[in-house]
Structure formats: structure tokens, C-alpha cells
Image (cartoon, rainbow, N blue to C red):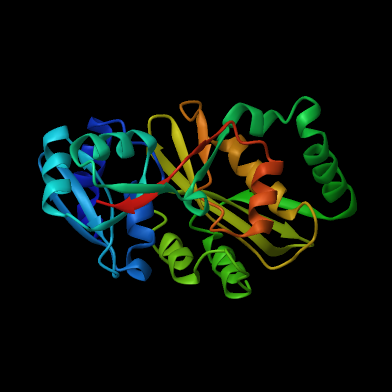
Length: 270
């Protein structure tokens, strides 16, 4: 996946109001190398094949998707929405799909995440309050002067199950300016210990695509994200933090932050 493909992918996504994180150019580009993504596009739609020969469910006109389904019989697909499943079954009764909860995307209301009001955010507010009370904390939006501090955090980060890949995180930092990303760095006692970043993927949706830290201190991850969310422009209404990758710990953390809905994903055979 090349940066030059951005205009093609985004034009088609915007045309069909396809605002999942999975099919955004940001996601396809950042995770393109590790997944071996190959783009197939025309004026009417696009499809993406991974290194295993499987496809993300295509985006495009009904005619484009119907032709894809008929020409890819017995092919495995994933990142299909409920509407995609219904369309596939209307074209090919032999298609088989099942829910893929490990890939479902968590979507949050930006106003809720910035204001944290009400009983349902009581625990989140308590963790943040304790974090700031017990630590010497500074937060700063990522810019040309401090982006090297984000690289320092990434270099000191030890991945756990479901945490994502270091190559994709580095690719996001390497392309921070060309992709128009935004982010925040958290410092403790003057040292960078956590960062997060993401970008606008259209339809009023912001995709949080990377969050790394070098300390397990409670409240650090919350602080880093909260400061970024507060700085997002008014046009952003929803925040998509992608999937939990099947990690029970990440699933619990994401549910604790009270998503307003899940982009449920399905996988199947055409």
C-alpha cells in the first residue's frame, strides 16, 4: 500500500459512506506491510487482498461488489459489516458468514470521552484524579519539536498480547505529517512515558491507531488519550479505537470506557 493510493481509497470510501477503521486508508497504509495488503481499485470500487490470499470485503457500487463475489467463489473474506453480509447472501446463497468479535471496532462519543460526566464514568474520573494527584504529569500535543519523544516511548515499549505491532506504530510516526495525524505525549517527571495518535477518517470519525507506554502506572493510558480527545476539532463526533484483537485485558479496558456502539465485523466464505 502506497501513500499515492490515498486519494483513490478515500474517494471511494467517502462516496459510499464507509467509515469503519478497517477500510480507511490510514489503517490500510499503517498495517499494509505487516499484513501484505495489495490494493485492487477502479472507478466503481476497491478490494484489498492480504498475504494469505484473503480479502477485506470490497467497497463500491452494488454492481462492483456483485461482480467481485461472483468472481471470487470460495474465497475467504473478513471485515464485513452486517449490511455486507446481507448483500453477499442476496447475491450468493451459498456464502457462509459468522461474527468475528475479535475484529469488531469500538466506537466512542467524543463529547462523552472529553467531559467524562455521569455515573458511568465515575471510575475513569477517579483513576485520572489519582494519577494527576500522585504524579508529576505533563501532556503535550505531538509536533516537530517533540515527536522524537514518541519514538523514545516506542523504543522502550514491550508488546503484550493484542497490543499491536511495532512496525505499524513506527510507520504511523514516520508518516505523521504526510498523513495529517495528531497525537499526544505524556511525561512523568519530565520523561516521556506514553503517547497516542490517530487521524480523521471521514464522516466525523477519528481513528485512534496507536497508543504505547513504557510504564504500567494506573491512569497513564487514560491521561494520554483524554488529552488528545480534548484537542480534537469540533467536526469530530466519534472516536474509533479499532478492535481488541481478542485480548481479554484490552476488551475489558475498552468496555470500561463505555463505547456507544460496536462496528460488528463478520468473516466468511463467498
